[in-house]
Amino acid sequence: MFIGREKELQRLKELKSKKVASFVVVRGRRRVGKTRLINEFSKSFDKFYSFTGLAPDKKTTNQDQLDEFSRQMTREFHTYTANFTDWSDAFFALSNQVQSGSILLLFDEISWIGSEDHTFLPKIKNLWDLYLKKNDKLIFIICGSVSSWIEKNIMQSTGFVGRISFTITLNELPLHVCRKFWPKNISAYEIFKVLAVTGGVPKYLEEINPKKNAEDNIRRLCFTQGGLLVEEFEQIFSNTFLRNSEAYIEILNTLENGAKTAQKIVVSINELHKGRIYEYLEELSLAGFVTRDYTWDLKTGRDVKLSNFRLSDNYIRFYIKYTAKNLNKISRGLYAQKSLTSLAEWDCMMGLQFENLVINNRHTLQKALDILPEEILNANPYFQNKTSKQAGCQIDYMFQTKHNCLYVCEIKYSKHPISIEVINEVQKKISALRLPKGTSCRAVLIHVNGVTKNLIEEDYFATIIDFSEMLNSGC
Image 1 (cartoon, rainbow, N blue to C red):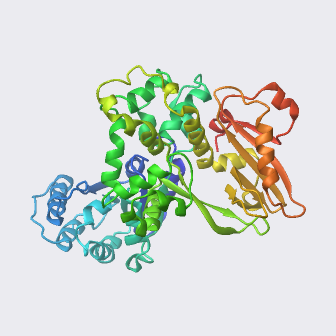
Image 2 (cartoon, rainbow, N blue to C red):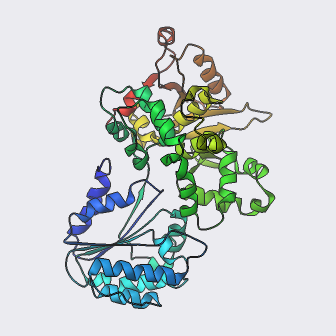
Image 3 (spheres, helix red, strand yellow):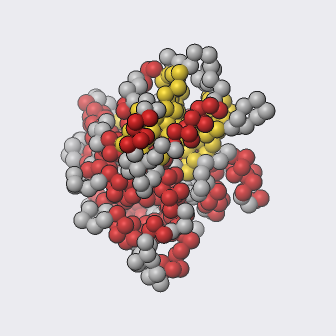
């Protein structure tokens, strides 16, 4: 099933109209649909050749990768199995098979293939320069889940400057696309409960049985021995990070209950890992698991140095919060009938997950508020620290426009319709802001399960957005 990557597919297809070969990079988190997109693109070629590396393992050597590449060449080209001891020889043999014709050539999980040989990437460059680009009907794609490796070794490498035609970073599917995995008669609230666990990750959504309710699906995937989302976490960290994953998991654990500054994260982690904290955070961000949210100066609209790191991957947070802590009980089948709402801090957890879904779909929110992109001076979760001159506050999401207007967005999860008390919460935040002269504030409420009649009658919020509107926005 191919859903939701039509724009990316169209951009790839546009490369075929060029009269020269193209070198493309596709990256994104595990299970986000990179290979599925490329397979769909391959249908427009006469020939499609795909190669992938062996998954990371302490015992895997460069020769193991070469041997596997040779075996895959035998299958792809129906030739004898060669004994390569050097990537230059392997690539020369490959080049002889792709000299002419409409060809899509894919190196999938590129970091796995070449991580054990420091000369691998220069030889990829030579493969492109000496052979591949001579076929003007060829498109060469390198793809991978280890975005930090791709960023450091390819995107920032002088060896590849001017060679890469196009780069695609696949993110989670937007909400209106996620909606397509359910029949029209399923409520937005039930869909939210699943998305609170899966986010917009295509593979996870494909595993949902829409004939079963949200609780049954979550129990099967997250609380049943052998369930996809029980096993997935270890797979992610063994395949995504080419080093000991302990430091990354420590950082994620500190972000379980909300965003933190780097300084607060440092206090919470093992002394051994503190010296490389920003490196680890950058790699987690490039992997798509953590997002760095900068706050800004309301007078100028410019970012300042203050920033929070937010665990922005819903599956990762849910696993850390609930699945990881109960693996022994799950293995004994003790969660087969357990009510999800009885889990510790369930409502608080769902609040954080709902906030992530909305923020990760900020473009839909922007459209719902009729804010044009060119009008935005800044937009992000906003926070200011308490000082002797100002109160501290944290706003779920805020737009600042060039027309001296702030849209203060309160993202509110509740099992019941939201009542009038939310007005005092939002007004307290607005009162803490040090507003530039002439600035207007418009309060916005985003909810998932309705609001009370009294709240509507107060007419406090400039806009009230139902989550179902975001699901059905079509943008």
